[in-house]
Image 1 (tube, rainbow, N blue to C red):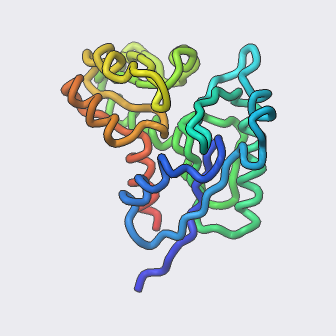
Image 2: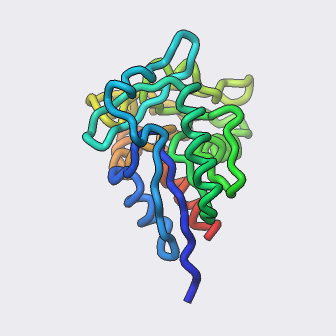
Length: 221
């Protein structure tokens, strides 16, 4: 019988994430003992309200356990995320999975870490380095100008936005990206059901961030 590995799923919000981790575990398959941690664990709503982005700071979005959507500043979340990773290093887990496609400069883990942003962006690079265009779907309008994926003279990058947690822009956003050769849903909050809707509207191949990350985790067990 294959050994069971302890895998830590770390959200930038509060744990657990029943809207995300169970779907990922279905793709990862057996052999996993999941534990969850969150950068906002232990904070009340008043404290969380103080973590909104400051001027010049990157925007992040997450869903709280009560279903509320919150927008967070990247720097403070990076600091809180590092504290969670340090704790998990001390606990000796097998693998850490960061459930956010934002990049956190300087955040490190002694434990092998699957950083969603790097996994997704390298996958996109591999599929578009020959000049194919990519449509990038992000949750917030602000993230369209903050994102690292850019047109570079060969590859054309198109952007649109639709929150996975609120509003009804998904179909409209998909239509705005229909001219791309490939669409990437660049947030761990997007679900497989949402991916199917975007694929139906665009008629194009669609990468779902949480599925790509889950597939990477499955290979590491």
